[in-house]
Length: 592
Image (cartoon, rainbow, N blue to C red):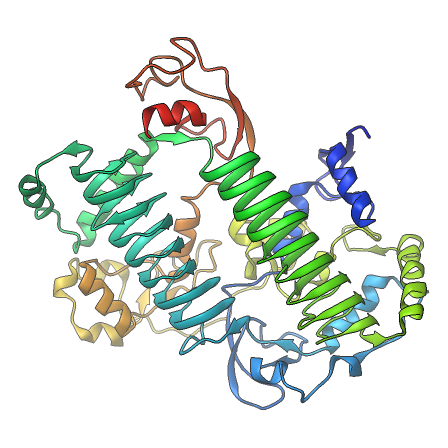
């Protein structure tokens, strides 16, 4: 089968469907998509809210809860204990399929009627303000965190402890502003690091101890601004750096960003990859347009995955899962999950489902079912009835399609319309990866939620905070500090914030100044430092004896000689960016 070019229903740009894509669609018996890969991704992300949390009460037991659903919404929300209990049954909301009405219209009615779980949080201790967390203790405002303790203002930290303001870190402890790193300890400001100890302001460094403001280091100690020093000289120079001063730290951060922009870059961050394209990957094979995945095989258009194979168009999947398509938060011991959200744990042959859990199979258009079988719109059928009715519904989805407010048509083969999302666009991670203004959000067919009006009485302006942490007393706990952004950004700014005791203790221990931004704005500043979930076709910038820009001079002779490297690749570094980007071979010649 040949490739085919289509126009996206949403953005109206052309996109290609390759022969291997058609083969996968045929394997799972679905038609090809009518939206381009990026629009499909944004649509899925608009169904996952990680950071927008609200105080509410359980609609069953009345207990005070923290919920990801805004209180003014139409949903019935249960605490996790009640939602997983036998006090209610999703089958009681079952309804007959009406062939005269669009399927998605009927599914939307079901979504509103079935109780929803307040938070995705399991086996946690003292961690009420963290969504999508598992086996966490003392974890605060740190979604997608697992097996971690004493974490705050982080994202996706696994097997970690004593971390603040970090992003995608594993097997680390005592860290601040560490991004995309592993096995680091007692360090601050590390990007793409591994096994770094007692270090600060490092970019792309491995197995480094006591290093400062350096890049592309391997197996080094006592390196200061990329200069090798003796232990005594290093200790002398590092003692002159006042990490506890906000003013000095701002200068160091500025220097760090300039230094890291000059560092040599590999076209993609990966460990063990074969026939792949994407970024932040480990042990992948035949994986294309994939971002943040480990143990991935035969996957296309995937993000945040663990142990996934033979799948397409997924985000937040595993472990493990296979034959997943157009899903968000799916694939935990699952197989053949299509067009579904938040549906996992021993599920098989499921289509168009939301929050169906705990061993289910042969479900179509269900919500909140536990251990469901042969069910449609939460109504159970015999196996024969189910197999006869599902093809009829699929056919009616073509003849009686759903049309959204933008005139986009949804037949069988498309993920849920964004209008069915229980969240506004700016409540979800879609805003994190593809930020939009309020006007552009509404224009694109998504909802926008204005921030609640909070009568904060600002007691301290950011410019009024003491410069050095050594001068900050416990009276800071009484202060309501204004965020420097003052709510004027699209970063879910809370306008004001407070310092909690655990936070101040950490700043004192690590000798760090008080922040001037609220946790959400700090999170978005970290997001700005990571590469986008997009790819560009580029050539290696190695021009023989140096990089094209002249910034990086090669230290050894490369395999291609003194001419320009002929290698080409897909990379998340846009062509207009200033960094020098090398292929794996040229990068390894210089760094490894």
